[in-house]
Image (cartoon, rainbow, N blue to C red):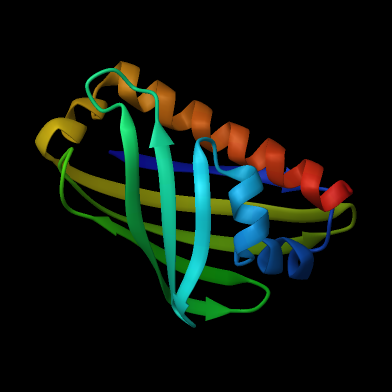
Length: 145
């Protein structure tokens, strides 16, 4: 499953960059997120509750910070194996300052196997894109507060 797109924030790229790496902010912004904590400086443990039929339940995933160049570049890798299947996703995020805020661009790819792979269809992709949109809107609200 591939995703790419942009989102315009009304905050400078440095604030957006820092917020994306802040566990408390991520917990507020990620739909279904129950907990986010640093395992070490380059790994975040994320606990999500999924309401999706057939996958309903609580899952933990490891988010690796593969590359960071504040405030313009983040490369993140999400890995999870276990009940529900496996996910190996990578996202490259770039931030560029514009006169009225930061423009975030993302390019992501997710490989899935097991029951979670059912999400790799038009309905599942719609749910994933909706969740991503919700994340960005929530992040914009946190940054505006």
